[in-house]
Image 1 (cartoon, helix red, strand yellow):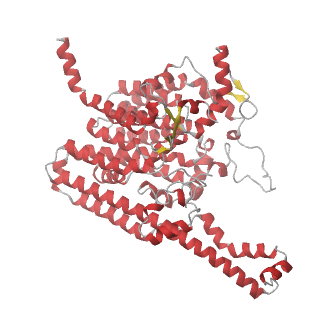
Image 2 (cartoon, helix red, strand yellow):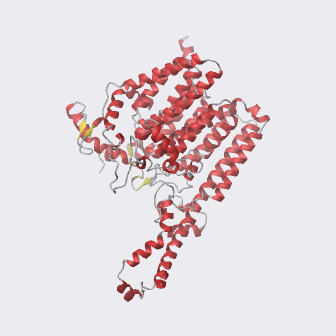
Image 3 (cartoon, one colour):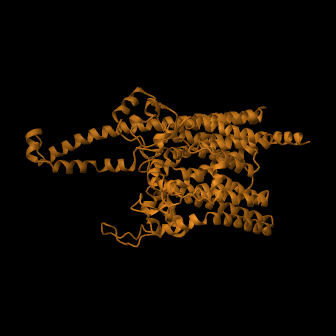
Length: 611
């Protein structure tokens, strides 16, 4: 009897075991050097090891937890760097969630398993959930932050989906399990210690809560809504109480840092700074990294702003330019920056995947119910907030009136919410497509209209560009004022020496203007070549996205129209998504060999003691 019961349990849950095995296999393949004695080169982790070394040595020598270190800023509390909270069992459970795999592979695994758990809470077909988890995990920004060493951020992002899933479960399926899972996953979310991501999750939960309130009013089930809300608040209170020590200490310390506001009303140059002050960080500091409005199209096509910052000669895209003439011009501007977006410097694009975006578009067309609109509003709010100083009116409102928002810098981080919502809507569409295939087959007009409209938009965009002339704002400002700069530079030279060596009489305005014109012509030719090269990169990226979009349209249309097994359909679509996303990610984190070692990996011993 026991043997038959175990066999039945195994048979009914084989798909979850398969998902777990697949996630482990994907993690091992992509992060293979980590399992062969190497550590990822992560700049922020190298800095962390330096600042935490004194604390680690004290802990090992005395067996006690020091609460102060002299290794940072002339002295600061260690609870902002590294403290072992031995009594916080929730934090220790993070190791279980990542199956005791260390970072970065362990955190990538949490991307996968976290999104899968969310979809299980939403009663999504496990086969569809596997595809969704893979699409979410390989969103390019999530790979880039692993390479940079933003471990707490990546952990918090990976733990965000199950928080949302448990919230949904409490309202829709099981109050008991929804509340219990909410307490646990919010607990580990807070234990990840990246409160900026937690804050952004709160915005999503608030909008979903409004949706549930409206839904329960329509169903005349206000009492049920109130009871569920109370249960969730208790769960979140429990999660907060477990992590209260660290949160309260962080809050107290923040008052004595730049996050505690600035009492000075005069800038160093003597001007008033009241217009840039908040009760937290200064607005200029908060919005220093602001996503460009046009740069938002990197969600659809990865290289339309050049990818990451760096010289064109070091860019993987320059060699892929279509014509020999463009490749020649790429050599001419080899030292110029391949990136021309609005941010000071960027490691790589925020690319969700054109196929995933297309699935989300179909979700907005086909999904019934109103939750999709609340998710869309959350994504739009997040996108607009990521624009920061490029959309300052909206940003000012949040900085001045929304509590806590002005405590966080780098507004582009909120794009993590966009990268969560887009694949979620796309997966929910796939779930409905599989359930209502015959109904959708009877009327293909919405599918055809959405596909043609999206394809037409992408083709139009590839020909029109983004309207920025393929130059950054700094480069445009430089060109605009170049003649004045040259004039000022020449006028600073010794006029006698210029006349003796070059025969130039700068007192003669006509001769002076001729010199300026010659130099301007050289610079303009340089920038013309730069524009052509970047235009080639933009067009190549758009062509790539249109190609994958057409593949997605073909796969989905074939599934609807013909008798293709669901497993084959999902496998084909999943492979297409991987072929789209993984090569982009490999530009920023790969297992490429360099000499006797790796480009992005180093022996563990060297990682422990970086030079």
